[in-house]
Length: 277
Image 1 (tube, helix red, strand yellow):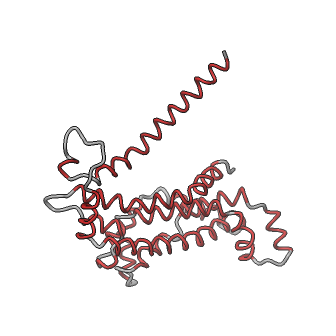
Image 2 (cartoon, one colour):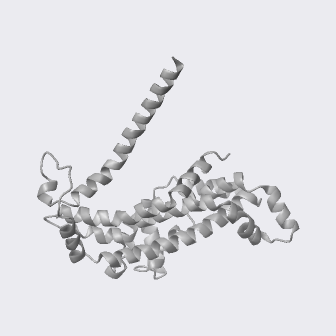
Image 3 (cartoon, helix red, strand yellow):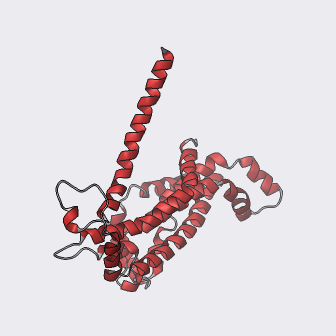
């Protein structure tokens, strides 16, 4: 009797998981379907749920209407530099908050957490004024520097470091003559690799998908990021939705590839962070 209940329980669990997978995957499937059809086929009712034969035509229209490669290159430059800088500054700050005692540490950390509750849109105007004052409007610096030492990254590394880097190991490093930076670089960084992998992927996806801040601070078409470039596919009076969906699909593919390559580190980073004290 218990065996039968166990099989029923497992069956229901797998059924729920299967439904969840279908719900999660369907938007991407629907995006792929729409990118292979014309606008009239997309707007047809009932909706068409099978692939069409317009993908290459839609992609040709994308490359004919926008400079997709330039936007992708700009986004890649900004995302890669942002990831490297964020990993360095957030890990350094997180390690400092976790393992060093200094006056005002708790106050500064609580103040940092409070900033996570403030909507980022509120800071756009003052941030733009600062970028204009220092001459960084229409530059890569305006897209990279403001987000390097972000509150979430510091909080994430601090929590992970607090439970994963033993104080005894740091004390042994001090006895061997390590200075503070060497404790961080030679002892903490190797232990923090899973957390850094998660933060790196999280940061890359966030920068890659960012639309509003690049739209505000960049006016030069040669510096437009991919999301801003894609927005140009929307016409004022008429929109070719097949072309728009093809461009969106093309922009989504790099994220899917990166996620599959680093998915193990991404998931293990979330799981490890979830069980830290």
